[in-house]
Image 1 (cartoon, rainbow, N blue to C red):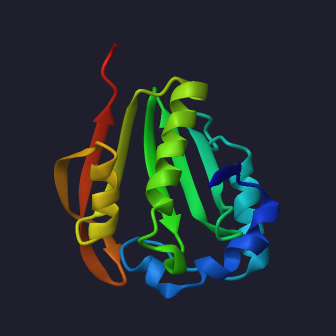
Image 2 (cartoon, rainbow, N blue to C red; image 1 turned 90 degrees about the vertical axis):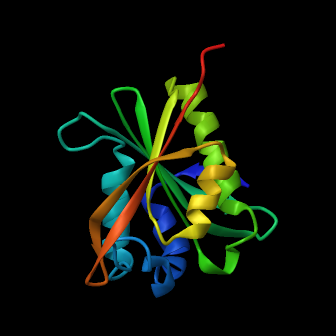
Image 3 (tube, rainbow, N blue to C red; image 1 turned 180 degrees about the horizontal axis):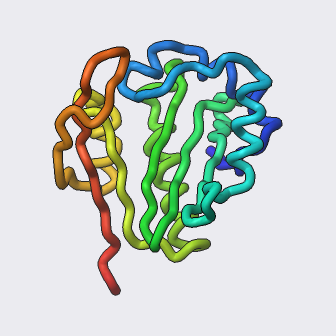
Length: 168
């Protein structure tokens, strides 16, 4: 497994996986409308900064050498020393450890290259796979946020997870 900084050229490799409606069962997003829209989005993300400059936006495509395919992406939003994490693994690759390996590698990069020691993630409470991934990496659930998002027209509760490295 290898993380590649996300660039517009990844749009063609990732579009097919992102078209799967099952990916959006637990996230407030919709499939990309086409290759040009996805390429434009990746162009904005490749700048690695929010428009106001307060946040770093770090995104990586996940390449699986064993599968000889891109299997999803991971992302981190850095602000004030904290990293908010998110990840998407394409359905054909669910349950095979790609998500956990990719998030663990992203956290290693964030520690080594950006000095991050505090990590957070918010996931739909019904997304048991995602919750298990975070817990396997040592995150703990610190709060439940009722009706935090609207997904497919219905209110959704979010579980907030945190992990803070202990000083050595």
